[in-house]
Image (cartoon, rainbow, N blue to C red; front, side, top):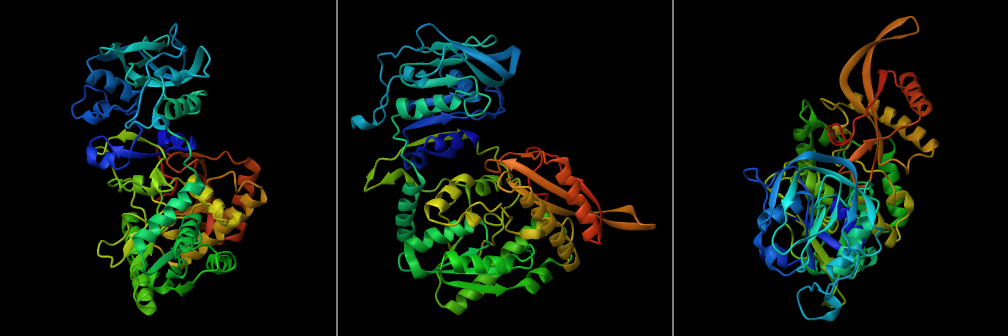
Length: 543
């Protein structure tokens, strides 16, 4: 996932596809090259992911990273063996003599258009110093190169830290996508622009223009309803669709009773002021809470919220008349964490101005090992018998890309940079059964957290900050009296896209203020703890 983000930062569209995807699925994406990602497997493991034959037979450049490099060697006749000196962490690679000198053998993409032709494999290293620090993470290593390959760099423990042949098949034993490889972005950019011949012109503006065409093609003259939650994903979805089809879109904001303090009023006011589109506000609090009575399993909570959400939408749609589509702000991390899914037809960001001219590199990963971490409200939490067709224009965007699109659409920063909030709302921040009293308690705690974080000017620095009402109580002393109250956990994380996250090192004074305010202002709580778990192994939300 991180590789895909780094590629897109170079303004080249890429998409993760399973290693066993058929060529017909990949061909629709019109790829300029392939990236074989790293992974925990060994090439000799039974059932280890293998690269499909078309990766090597297509004539397109290939960048194989870590396990991908070992796979490249293994499948093309080289040898891979367990290393006696495993490399984990920092290392330095040094280029072989002549490796930084451009060679004469061009690597060409498919077709005869000179503008789409790649360049020499050696241009991968243009602008790089003779020795560069890198990040290694491997136990196996290549002991014999495949026929036709040459070693381009080595480290103290890896004689073949970089290998390549004249057909544009390149292997890296290190990870260029991580920040610990400071020249990694330059190396990836060289591969994309110089070796693959990509244009590097995939931008928010191009995405908007292409998405408008795609939305119009999908919707035609149909009517669309869009769920507004107040978050950036649904806001950008609504703004994008409204720009495409205007008043064919009606937005519906459902107060499910699981929102934060003052959120319903703020959301309605914000969208009336800034988006100026058709907006219906419905309060379904009683309905959601009745359905959640007695439910403690987090996956069941998500499914109930998703199903009830759709039923409310169906009823509102009936009042509107004929409605054909429902729009959702599903993003790429939602899809990945929910177990993924098949790649769609070639996305319009690969096309522009009536001809194929944008660029793509496909990253291979194993679909066999994809698992559902948790069901997302926008993905697996929806009932299968929906009567609407889904419109999900952001389905293959990361959160930072969604924000860029939002700014390009002219949305205000208060919407664009709002911290993520889960679709099931506070239901998954209350451990155990959801009740009105627990919701009131959690809202009061959450309000204090956000008030203090904003007061410390840290809101934009954090990916998320919130309170969790646990299902554990503790004994305390307040004044001369014994208390037996709820334990509240504070969760604050930093992240780029929510696929990984680190716990935020909040100042002690800030944590002390938050804890002191909660135990003094929220009567049901007598203890506050701070969650210092990163993702992985934990997830950002507790449920």
